[in-house]
Amino acid sequence: MAELADMAVGVLMLVMAAGCTWLGWTSLRRPLGSPVIMRGPGWLVRTWGLGYLLLGVGLAAEEMGRIAGEEPV
Image 1 (cartoon, rainbow, N blue to C red):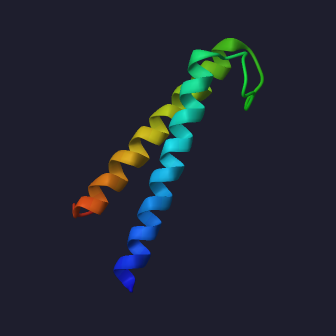
Image 2: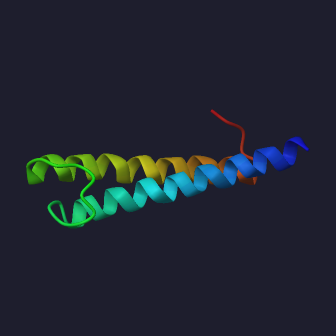
């Protein structure tokens, strides 16, 4: 039962990582376009987008390693 719960948490984290990556990528590509998640000057929106993009990639990499059996650091 614990393995099933761990797998469910892993899938949820991967979905969250994909969402963060998508939000970051759309903010980097179109800082003043839709969807408008953050408002402000273009450089600030792009910086926010880069942060979210890196957060999503990092979450995905960490979770894929955990699912594959890698020990957490």
